Length: 401
Image 1 (cartoon, helix red, strand yellow):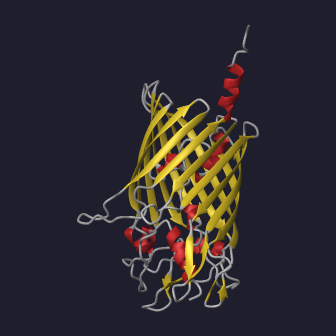
Image 2 (image 1 turned 90 degrees about the vertical axis):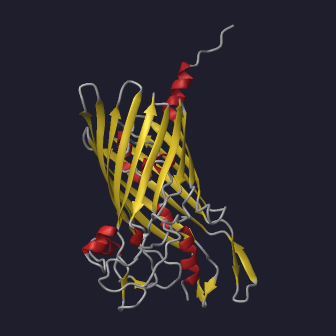
């Protein structure tokens, strides 16, 4: 009973919300066996550009939102300083007061080094707690945030690496108790490690391009707990992702970029303690659990392959001022079942840019339209180019009499 309240709150936050978890049998690779973690908001994309491209971003051309996807890309920023702000109403099909807000900022130290910071804030809106008789106890505003600091360094003309440190705070029901167990706010720490490689390529006699690859390991860190029990701790959503992207200069005014990401959670697969039991985790340390997650599925290699999820996106730019984007995200039905298409646009004007994305409702079978809590998700983003601001200021002519 002591985790009922927490499980309910975390389920509302979950990226895979709406997909049930069932009992499994040892060796059954066909059973639904979703991997759930604490603080799943860490795997919600806070970027409207990538949000319009099927949540792809590990190897995309860098921008101010690169901290989330792969901080190593920041070493190749061609601007001295920039920032981004994104706002995402979340799970609008269920409630109307949950949202994710993100602020990112980067600064180049020199031609080889870049530092960055970002802050993600996730609000679950207002929740009314009641007792067993239905009497109102209190209203509460569950909230979570993560603060990152990143350092990216260019090691060669084509290759860069980065490391990020992250502080995580999650307050879902602090001050309340379940079955006489006190609920606390949870704290944790994690690191990201990224690599990025890019190279100019010649696609044809008249067409040049930029090919890139990236690798990012994220949220590798401590377990967190919402109680004082040392044995009652949950995994962070540690993840490994690899991506590739190809940007093509079609002509002087038109460019097209295609990108593909493949991701997998570095979290142990839940397993049955007995043949007909519900899911559980073996007690691994975070690092041991990340390693075990590569081979530990109850259904063997066949089930392990289902734990990979995929993003594919395309972005078209006209004259570096107007863009149209689209993408697809796919996750196996036995591991969460998220499947959706996305679309969006972007506009860039001197100092700032505006991004907008929309998650298109998708069919999950040939006969039934399954409504997902993610359907119709919107993201709004602003990008700021401080170099352009300086340039505009220099170009202003003084008034004359």
